[in-house]
Image (cartoon, rainbow, N blue to C red; front, side):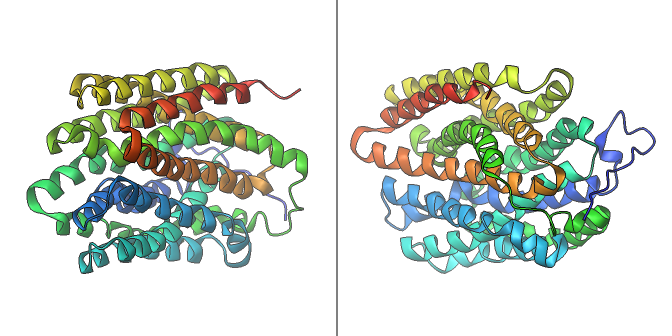
Length: 391
């Protein structure tokens, strides 16, 4: 099947939101990711309330994202068989319907089981969302479209990551688990997105398998993403335990979220104008510096000033590299393989987030959170080797 290319609507040079399907994608992303963001820091705290230690609470998001990654491998095949509408609808139902069920038990095993169900839904949502953003606009607007999609994804993270901890602390966990059901509201937008795609709904139906060179090309930006999302996973999971104050941890998460949202959006315009490659190495170093600053704050008993400063630096790297590495990944493949590139990128994103949560939790159990954050900083520095372009 030959892919068609979206035609620029009036005013499209100014805003990618004027392209057909982009508003529906934005609403799908806001409601869908609300279910993810509301529970990312709260579900581990729910497990701690049930008696889990740092390693056990780290497993909550580790299992969530392991299920996410396992599902992401199969999403391109599901899209070829069923199309975007039904697949995305199943994803948001799995993600949203499981959330209120946490109230049945705070024991670790039931919490992990529900996290796995939510992870499967989240895996579908992530792969389809980033691929749709690339399909709905011409290639020369792709950075801006990915930035706009990233902004829609970041809004619930920006609001609910800090607020969910404060809500659970002040009014109880039940309110947060109700917010976690918001993906159910996104179900109609799944089919609206599929209608906007038109022939591109099944763009990969007859595409040949991606060759080895294509896989290697996608792996380079995915590896960089893996490194920086380990940083995000560690901070998002353990900020409430490092700061030990609901208000303080909310501030750290808010600063991280603002940096992530702004830089994920802004990086898209920079990549369309200047190219993504030149920004990769400096951003990895910014992320490493931010993690080292957070480690310093953790070693000083949860110093809020240092943790806020470190979170700001991590947010810059975390947000901008999400956009730029996705742009680089899509540049390596033809349109028919964009769902495959999206799956690979999202596997790196969620695999890195899970690895960061599990690694910091395991290290913190024996050596403290400061040591865990320093290890993540070293991972960002090691990833610099991946910024060297292939010849």
